[in-house]
Amino acid sequence: MARKRYSDEDALKLLREIDVHLHDGLDVVSACRKAGISDKTYYYWRKKFGGMGRPQLSEMRALQSEAG
Image 1 (cartoon, rainbow, N blue to C red):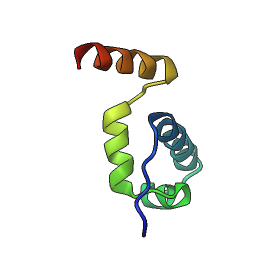
Image 2: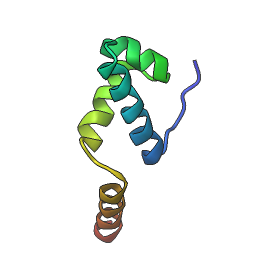
Image 3: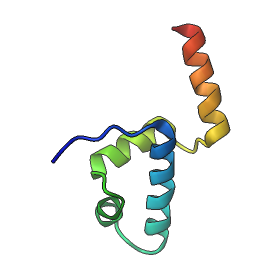
């Protein structure tokens, strides 16, 4: 299977989609399959982005560009 790179915005969108599936009663593996990602990717993104929204994502990028 070909590897796909997701932007940070796409990752946040997929995390929200998976949260909806989880709320509907699916388990993590099934919800991730519906979204088209692996459960390992889901846990990585959840650790990286946590409860972040778009404004926090913009702030994170600005801080990274200043530091780097």
